[in-house]
Amino acid sequence: RSSIERGIEYLTLFAFSSENWRRPAEEVTVLMQLFRVMLEQEVAKLHASDVRLKIVGDLSRFDSKITDLIARAESRTAGNKTLTLTVCANYGGRWDILQAMRALIAEKPELAARATEEDLAPYLAMSYAPEPDLFIRTGGETRISNFLVWQLAYSELYFTDTFWPDFDARTLDEAIASYRRRER
Image 1 (cartoon, rainbow, N blue to C red):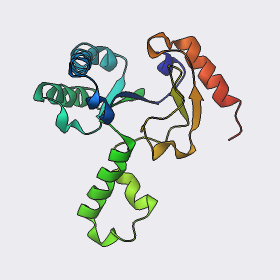
Image 2 (image 1 turned 120 degrees about the vertical axis):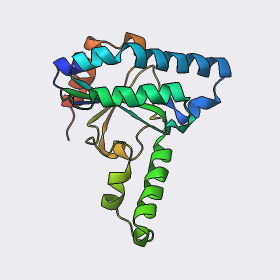
Image 3 (image 1 turned 120 degrees about the horizontal axis):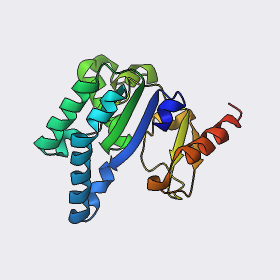
Image 4 (image 1 turned 180 degrees about the vertical axis):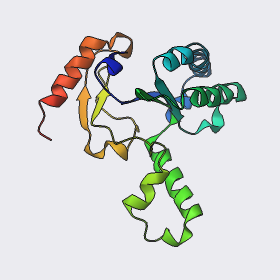
């Protein structure tokens, strides 16, 4: 809601990294249940708010119930225009670059030895979105944790001690104000 109110057109959340599979099995199970609940209960609200939902990452590790919910959610919200909300799930920036290179070479093998950044860019998982202007990391961590490695090359980085559940409109405004004070 706060992003929409501020005119933000693209918001990307790192919900579940490819490295998260290494967590204890019980924790992964809870995270998958939360993901399923979000897909079952929040999509109608997103659609009513004219939000397009995209899920990016290696979806092959999710069960068929989750992948079906993802497909339905993306289809239902595909025409929405106010905000594109991307949720990165089983996503890693290194995976993204590798899958993009594999797809490029499969489609255009003649470019294998001489591909450019421009050749690769359309194959990245987030090729539909502009590169982020601002990266916000919550919870006191000061690393990007394999998130949008390619896309963050020229982004402004903002780190806050505020934990994600407490990140609200006020803390979003603080991050935006910090961004606006920077020389770009």
